Image (cartoon, rainbow, N blue to C red; front, side):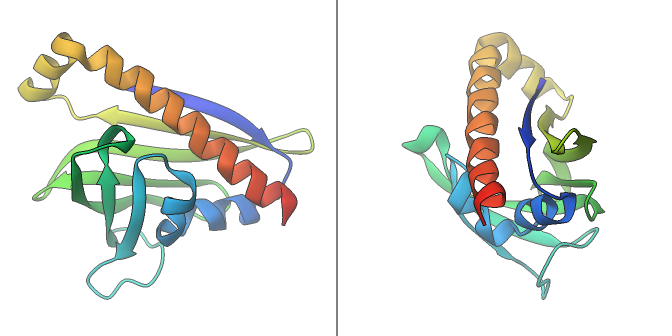
Length: 151
């Protein structure tokens, strides 16, 4: 399962990237993640750094913590992380910035790991989750857009 959404932002790449990569701000933008914090001494984005996010699934619950590891960290260009179960990546989230016109096209995407549990989930209602993720990615990007275009 995977999906992506792109929103144009009339702002410089470094400004957009700094907002996206500051995972402590995720709660300002995400409909489901309402707070997050760096782990293991990390204080900001770096390849391999870990953080955890406090999630309210579908904005109503259940509520739980997820541990994540930064998998892509190129300032002004891309930021990505894997949601972990132990050391295994369950879901991979990625942001890519591409210069376009007066700013940047910002693409947020997700890709679930390919293992039997995910394939079963995909058959039993995964398309509803894909639709929800796409809606939430658009909401997240539109909220980021308001911040980076108006600061």
